[in-house]
Image (cartoon, rainbow, N blue to C red; front, top):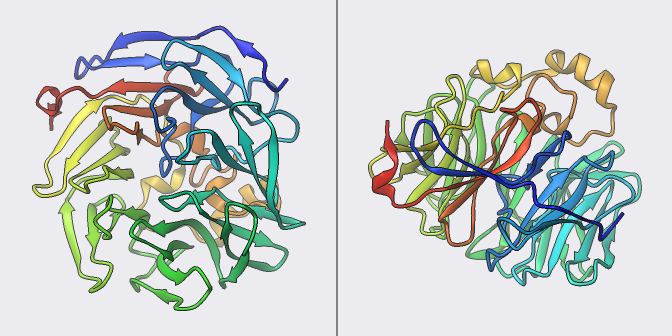
Length: 377
């Protein structure tokens, strides 16, 4: 039930590769994971951690407060939420999330829910807020139509921007909320469009043989950063589109710090653990091991999956799935909850991640400490 409280499940240990302190925050025999890697799981004051748990039978929103040893409180109940959709508002009070074709807001103080906008018969992807929390965008699939939606957090001014392919991971430019960067699935990947639907363009033309993934903004620099899986971590100038290789390293899911000087990432094939990559030098430093199973057959390749690769997954997940990457039964790109998806705390001293090292996915947080203490690869 919404508002129900559970005792702390905290356990702490030292990472066997780096000696860093790692907190296992959940231990329930169900799937538990932080919010998606493009969002912080911590409230802005760092006092609470938001996570998703299936402990009640489907995906619902929970919090641990105060972090790390506080009680676990259930925030939502009823129909399942999109498990990778939550985004915390800068005020720390409101959390936005998706159920089906609607974006909802819940107030953490009284647990009242408010429907921000509803697109009947649609499926929306994860929420993404602009820096001040005034605007929201999300991918959409509604019947034969697909693209992205954008509008105000107060429910006004919503617009659907059509796109001929599946859209995932739309994000506002951190310095100019008029612009949204988004991913077309599969290639070519990187695109941008103005919030009013004008100015749509592809930022980089490439084919299926160049596996560009997990693009996001390089902190507050205004540049983009992305992975060419599994060869390199690269950056792109927003204005000139000049591409520079930061590091030849199998960086996977990536999250830059605000200054744009370091990029946090997990790794796969081989799994070398979580790393910080210095943008200037390209030097990676290991934070800790993830020991996640990181499932998905496509990650053994260096190209996007095509229609024939999804035949089995499509019959299982159904045609309403927004993206192949979000299919819970998918063996091509997931299941996603087996991936670490690391993200920073607001003060960038902690990293939340998921791991199924115990046989079931749980929420973990590693204390990074000083960079000099990190293990250099």
